[in-house]
Amino acid sequence: MKKYDFIIAGGGMAGLSLAYYLSQSPLRDRSILILDREAKNSNDRTWCFWERKNEPSPSESKGEPAIWSNPFQSILFRSWDTVSFHGTTYAGPIDMGAYQYKMLRGIDFYAFIRQELAKYPNIDWKQATINRIKDTPQGGFVIADDAPYIADYVFDSTFLLKLDQPENHNLLQHFKGWVIKTEHVCFDPQRPEIMDFRVEQHGDCRFLYVLPFDERRALVEFTLFNDKLLTDSEYELELRQYINRYLQAGAYEITETEYGVIPMSDEPAPENPFDHIVRIGTSGGYTKASTGYTFQRTQRYLQTIVQNLVKTGKPHRPAPWFGRRFKLYDSIFLNVLEKHRHPADDIFTRVYTENPGRVFTFLDEDTSFIDELRLFTTMPFRPFLNAFFDVLRRKIVG
Ligand SMILES: Cc1cc2nc3c(=O)[nH]c(=O)nc-3n(C[C@H](O)[C@H](O)[C@H](O)COP(=O)(O)OP(=O)(O)OC[C@H]3O[C@@H](n4cnc5c(N)ncnc54)[C@H](O)[C@@H]3O)c2cc1C
Image 1: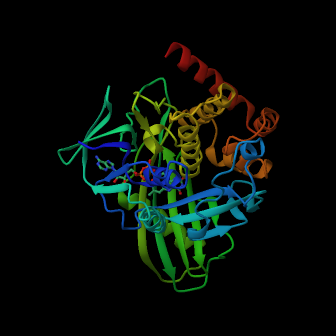
Image 2: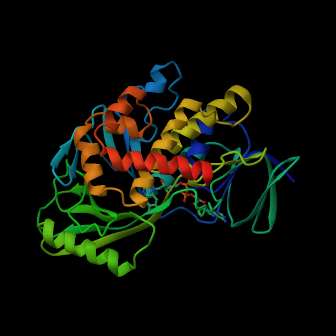
Image 3: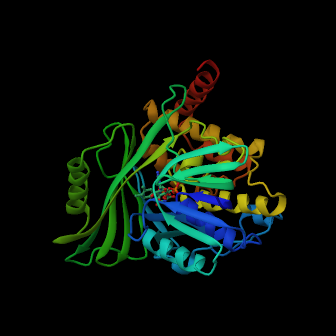
């Protein structure tokens, strides 16, 4: 059996990003096998994220090399300098500071990576269902469609997290969206609405998300943070009501639909469970628990993994201890939501309107501790203090 240097188990967002970074690094000649059960030739999702405008990130300016700044700039579907927000006491633009809000379609991402990787004969692809991934003394071992494969390292994005421990917080971010084409001109193509809270909250966090493609086409998505999925017709009712009430759309046609569920969990998800297996993407716990955003963190983490592989031959990603404070902040926020300690629409209104310029850096975990304290002073004090003690109690007592 041929032994690969790397097997990428799951060629979705994380797996293909990793393969791309490897191909752009001194490791470009290593033998790589990419396994996925899907052909990845449909637009199965759209990623939005914010990114600095071609400037070095704070970690880059601290001396770490910027090997891949804005790697997918050439295939973005849209990017915006300003976003809008509709909260409880404010409706209008939000200053994005040094950032741009960006939108990347799955189909463009998959096609771009496939085209780039086609230049490398050392990269094999196989469409197959993975039945088993196992650590052995000889390397990471994979069975896919009953055939065995082995490699020095297996990068696994297919592992399904079990998120059920009571001492942790396990919410879900779930959403249904429609790309609509409207009769009337009704969107401002320069202004995506990242959160519109003009929807009954039912004690949850519920909002609409509107990403305009042009004046008559947009992705309109209804999103919830809670622990119960809705039925299809419940999502659709909210979408219809929002479009009828707030968009002067006239008649409209639904041209695409999107549905997704993203874990919002502070349950530990070990990235390096075994010597030869590294979990990446959602499986590796790369989703930020308090927001569900995964795309940009995955890019950052995978870049670090490839840098470490180049430098040391090992893929492990160091986690500086002081950086772990962000996990505590995420847990506190999830606790406030889970225990309904304060209305979520008011929390987000305070976060975005009282911390312009700071909020995106904070969510990127790039702020200084002083800036974090400044942001905390804009939050309702008691609910967050109670959540802090509850998180400590749950972590210590269980
Ligand atoms: C609809 C949707 C929209 C999202 N939008 C955003 C967004 O706007 N911004 C953001 O930051 N995050 C977003 N996310 C969250 C996250 O970025 C995505 O889920 C992202 O695709 C996760 O990357 P991944 O590589 O971990 O998983 P995936 O991209 O799902 O890749 C996993 C791959 O493994 C394959 N696979 C799984 N099991 C097997 C098996 N047994 N055998 C073979 N292959 C297998 C799958 O076919 C898939 O290709 C979204 C998620 C969804 C579902």
